[in-house]
Image (cartoon, rainbow, N blue to C red; front, side, top):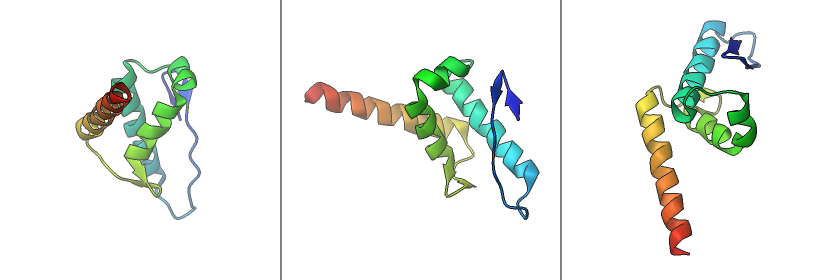
Length: 90
C-alpha cells in the first residue's frame, strides 16, 4: 500500500483478513505522521530506530497492541524524556 510516497508491504497468512492488515498499516502511518510531522522517506531513513520502536508499540506478535494514537505517542514521548534524563545524569 502506498501512503504519502511511502510503500508498505505486509506478509500475512491466507486466512488473515486483508482489510484489517490495511487498517493496521494505515494506523501505523498515522502514528508516524503525527510523530514526525508529515512523515517522508528521509524521516524513516535517518530515524529507522524510532520507526521500529513505534512499530513495536503499535504491534505485538503481529497483532494490534494499541489502537489509540494518543496513548502510543504519549508513551513514546515519556520514554524519550526518561532516556534524556538518564543520559543527562550519566
